[in-house]
Length: 186
Image (cartoon, rainbow, N blue to C red; front, side):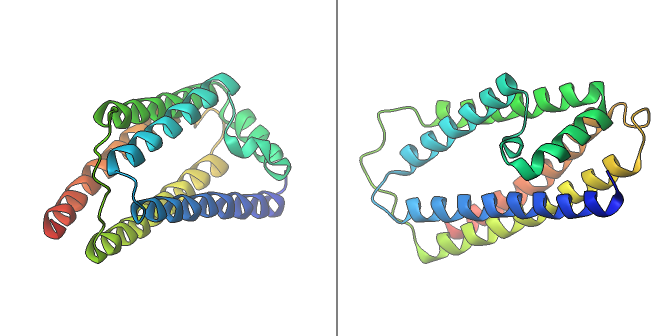
């Protein structure tokens, strides 16, 4: 695969990822403005994460692999990563399953009968949080692409573990920001 071809496919991949993020945030904010309880919304989110995590482990492919334009890229990444590819897929799948179970266990039925009454401040907070998440996801994805595309298979040993540690550090940095935001709007 030439550098130009790889660059074009990476741009498509970023567009798909950002499109999925935008659609997810729109759905989430739309659900918050309905008469559905927050427990039910988060339980549904947990089920979605659980199912996508299980499918990632069973299918052993990213959901983007279902798109014909992304198959070539996914095959390239599998070849480039070698054994790290399996670790990467399993780690991502198990993390989604864990997060899904976390949401499910925190929001088990019976759900609250009170609808979630979202204030304008809360919606603005969710939009700000969505922008923050989008920026972090894009920066981490682009950094991962650069690392993957510029190194050899041998140099990529430990790629999954390093990415997991970096992701945990970013998560640890973002959680206090979110908690402060929640306290401010409460």
